[in-house]
Image 1: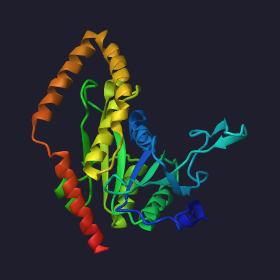
Image 2: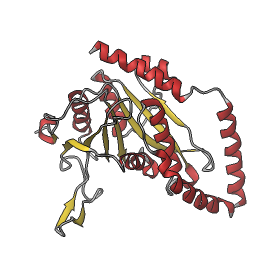
Image 3: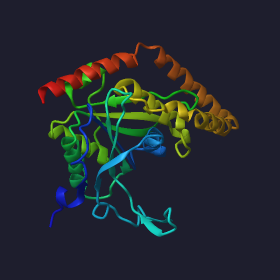
Image 4: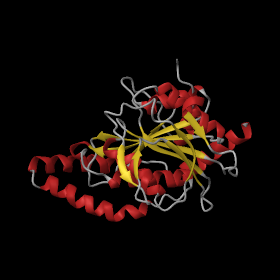
Length: 292
């Protein structure tokens, strides 16, 4: 018997106050989150914020627990508990920002992707989100010594024109994020995919610089504080580790120098400012609200 959304999605938002211009952020640990950069970025963003869980997806039908194993832990009362893979929807209110956020910082499921993505669509509709932003990280030819670019794509023609985003051109194996964006498109909920680069020659290390780049981009465009400056100590620590890994290899050092020259040339090209992007997004979201 086929699964249904009602069987796996629990919602708890009946008594919450209305959200202010909500946008949903989704980051899923898995194939398209190299180094856990996107999920760690949201971890930092949520670190000092009060988050309220308003929905969750039952993990049991979606995971092979021989691959994504549950964990045993002791709770605050010393009781032994099992921690299952979580995909919870949390709301964060930003009275000092332009909007409130709905955040999913979870784990890419192994099976039943259609039902999983329909759960995301259902929550986006139920909470009145006019935009869903998917976050990811990919191994690319970027130098660890520079702030990596954040690139975006969307299937929405107006958003692509306003924000200077590309239309998706990729063909090949995809992850849940790709299926989710297709489901949102069919449900007529605008969506954007944001991806940050991770140095491919250090892809098994941690990359707080890439996480901070994602957060800074979100802060500029969405008008919410992401506290990305709090990552500075981690950035400095990992910069030293990355430098040490490269300096002992003349061939690697020469390769990084080449990547730096190419990166600096790209930076010199005219790129839209964060303020311009934020203004264009606000205009688009106002249009969405007026249509509703």
